[in-house]
Amino acid sequence: MATTSPVIIVTGASRGIGLAVVGALLKSYKARVVTLSRTRSPELSALVSEHQDSLAPLEGDVTKEQSALSAVDIAKSKFGRLDGLILNAGTLEPLGRIDSPESSVEGWKSMFDINLFSLLHLIKAGLPLLRESHGRVIFVSSGAATGGIAGWGPYNASKAAMNSLARTLANEEKDIVSLPSAPGWSIPRKFTNDADAIGNQSERQRFNESGRT
Image 1 (spheres, helix red, strand yellow):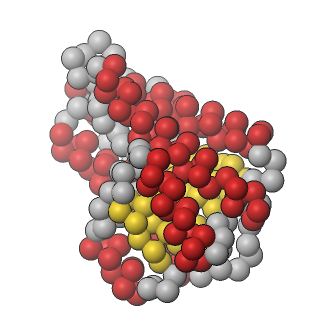
Image 2 (cartoon, helix red, strand yellow; image 1 turned 90 degrees about the horizontal axis):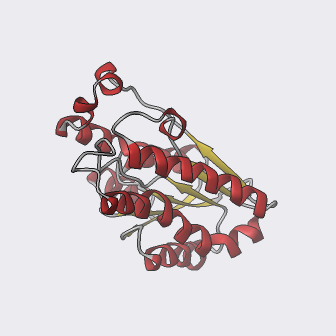
Image 3 (cartoon, rainbow, N blue to C red; image 1 turned 120 degrees about the horizontal axis):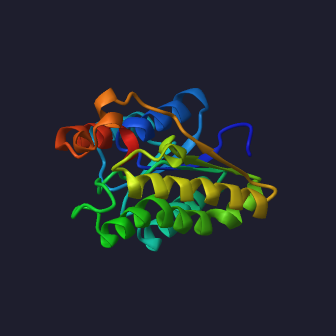
């Protein structure tokens, strides 16, 4: 990976963890950054205004292959290389116990489209450039991958699959550093003790706004 001015693609960068990562990359590491997120928040727009030469925002659906191809193309055409991916985009919903009406197979598939298969789109698109730079792929994971919180089935499983994907990539691409990272967050006690509370709309929104989306 480049020691100066690396080029990084960050997904889910409009708020929360993703936005904070982008700010740190720009200010502390003098990186050049391509962001991929569904929307451009006022906070991200402010960063774009402040770092016009080093920040290239892209609005798109991470589950679509074309979004991944476009992000990599921007990194190559605007900055000339790609040194890393920070795969932060994700979702917590749908929530619900396995036998609940809310926990449909289609809901599980939708979760995996965002939390797992979208990662494959970007990894496959970026691999040629990452091989050239001996780059890094950082997966924003979660303790839920091993914790198995009741009512979080799709999320737990998708993050466990993410960790497995990170290990597989590390074994297949020896010149690329592949690392899952669980940044953590403060979970109210009732979240882990009461499955009904897990489905509370306000709690879901608070989690989603923490940066996983």
